[in-house]
Image (cartoon, rainbow, N blue to C red):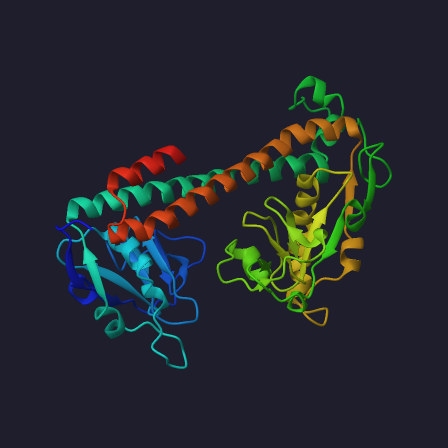
Length: 400
């Protein structure tokens, strides 16, 4: 740490201001983001803070730290941060994360972060020039992660639109039947049938139940495999699938059947609770019950993934209605979900067109994971002065 850094307390550097009640925000539209204790919850047309700022969760089991690049609104379950002493607001954001202020608990029945508990904590503060440099380094990593996320949203929408047009709506065949102009390359256009059969699918195509297109392997009751010794695997449960974070995952023995090991890019499908299907982007782990590991010897993973996503609203409605005992779907729901299967001469170009989009998404996810690991490595080192700005910049440059 440089001799120019000064010792202080959080109370001398920031003021935590209460958010305000807002019962009229909309979850879909508005000019300004609305934040709650654990992140964005909607939109409103009136800002509470008219500049970029930091939100710190105040109440609830999950209290996050958020940075808004634009004016925003904070509801009364969270604080917004008002800097003192001309501190850089983005540096304060990373310092708050580094000092884990969002994890302070005052011991009340409803977990809470109090101002008094935050203000007494000590902090080492670098000069403003160094604050900005630290924020720039860490911010560049987060910006790239965010760009990958937004790029993936576009790629996902493109893949889904192609999949639906070719395999659900049968767009090329219907266009041929209507005498419309081709909208695909001539060699691809010719591969699609000229008409639909009596079942309403393209002539020569087949249908079969979703659960026959792939193996849906249900996870293990991993409490029966406690971790022993120095090695363990994180138990991948629904909460880990949702966050792709295994830091708080239960450790289990690595001595489980190989089929139940989860590797990066494995296709996972939670069939219980809120239901979701994702390609795993976390570290190697163990498959817990209530999750399917989905594999197929006949079809590429993207094909099965897109069909699961197509039926997902229906599956979620079944679970939400608690039509079954635990609010989940059963095997019969997979059997009742029919998949339309084209011949190989169409699957081949589909693998190039749609599969390549999914592969790019997975590549971006892998890059984001690496960048996040680097950010998490640099964060405490930069905040403590353990690593120089120049060395940190070199590490980020090498990772780009």
